[in-house]
Image (cartoon, rainbow, N blue to C red; front, side, top):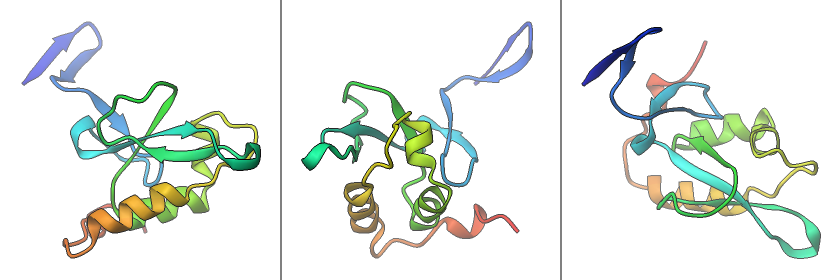
Length: 112
C-alpha cells in the first residue's frame, strides 16, 4: 500500500537502509544489529533478529556480500556511533550460519 503526504508517495511499510550496500529495503528483509558489552571494554556488534534489544540499531541485509561491504567500509562503528571499532564476529557467525545452503541474493545488490 502506498500512502501520499505533502512530500509525495511513501511506502506503507517501514523502509531502512542497509549499512553494507546502502540499498533501501523493508525492515522485514533486513537484520537489525546493536552494540553489546564485550570483554575487556571492546564493544561487540550483536545480531538482533527479533528487533527487541535496547539501544541504537543499524540494519544489514543478512547476506555475506553486504556484511563484507559493511566491514570493509567500517560502517558498524559509524552507524552505531561507537568511538572504538567494534568486534563484528557475532554478526559474521550469524549471517554465515543463516545463509548457508540458501541461494545468494547478492548478485542483485552488487554495485559496479
